[in-house]
Length: 112
Length: 115
Image (tube, rainbow over all chains, first blue to last red; front, side, top):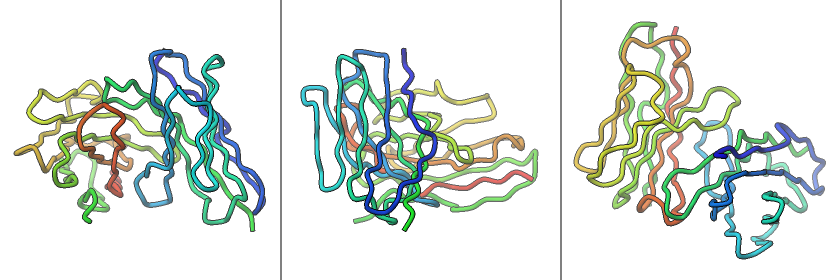
């Protein structure tokens, strides 16, 4: 019930392509879904987040799509650039709870 | 502005030794988290501090692990009698308060290697 399942484990995309990372959750009480980006040797940093009252949120080239009925959400990176190469983590939590439940991460490589 | 600071950035020690890892959260942040990240893996929650409340220690893997937070600011994570399986990156994060969708701000971690 507490798990967040993330796929794929790794992803290689050509420069200019669309990168798509998917996450699924089980706990319907979750109401906050952030994505974090981590570069090698650095800590994760919040990239973008969504609440279930909207189906999509876009910030620049990054978009979260949210499907409440399917209990799934995904990160889309448009016009992927080599600088986007990093590990991406999805997570979920309840507003009333401090603890984030993390996905296992996706290592994204953008080929020039 | 200053972010979350962790020290040391790297620590190599022999099996059986004790180690102390330090975290300086962002000033004014009342919530502090410790995580462990093994090579190529996700984040494993260890412990959570919120203000003066009793910490949530539910993620500590064994009684060799302990943490404290003095004066609601700096935190130290102590691992006693280290084992090779303790080798990992230990990450600290802080947020203005726990819950309420507050983003967690991470330090760059301490890379711990047990020989």
